[in-house]
Length: 384
Image 1 (cartoon, one colour):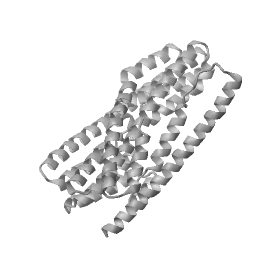
Image 2 (cartoon, rainbow, N blue to C red):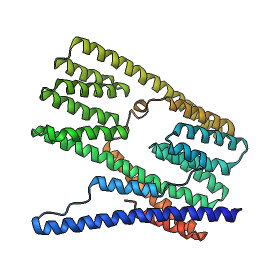
Image 3 (cartoon, rainbow, N blue to C red):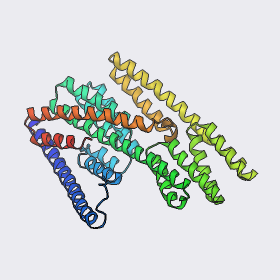
Image 4 (cartoon, rainbow, N blue to C red):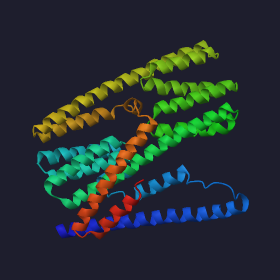
């Protein structure tokens, strides 16, 4: 039975490695071909131009490709939920399985479920929770002496860095583009900057950086106002106010409302926005209460877990997750680190990822899993 599992595991790792190699090779080939064409054109048209590095979009595409190629296989039911985007159902199923495993004192099953919870968290962009789940799975597998599973989790930690680095780069690029857009506006080029600002808003919303998205909306509001585009100005202002209020930043929401009133906002519209601010802030307070409940349940989980009552601990952990599922994303991610902090964290993550992939390399080598060795080394080449 163990031999069959090892063969199946090696086959899965081999398939992932082949996919990763094909994608990375394809990206590299396209990039080299593009650079050859550009270089030849530069020699003819612009012999004195400096070399331009790869665009951020090409880097993001490369990271996305590697993440997809190295994605681990989930158990059938969880895979089906994940593919359908039903992450809440998938998480509930895994939490129930974890409770059953804790009741049966089956640490191997518990570690397996933790690993899958970690992968789901990665897919949802919940990098902090992914790190927690993976570290717990790693500890259990180490206690069990399951070296191959330990290596698998170390590979997952390496993939976690790819997500972290991608997020840091996207955050940094969005911030740079915002500064460039504002410079363009200051030089009378709002029409050229308008589309870029809208894209910056979408990028920051995707990254749960609602304050940054609101800031971009405010830039749009000011520019539309300066160009006497009243309708677009009010739309951008309302969106910024909504983001501020649902993130608990009442002062920023009211400040912008006063600006809109000074620019001629009607009394009826002003009263409507004021009511919306109150409604958005009430939604925020409900979410904050739910976050507090989740924190209390998490503390009970830690306390009971330290006492050895794993079953009761996991029941409270499920309650914590249930409470968080009722929280709006704007309240949950109301405080996001500065761009430089994101980049610093990704550098720390880089060090952790390299160490984890080296450990995976050693363990796969020990058991003669050549595909695993090659996969860990290929992933290590993508750490930058």
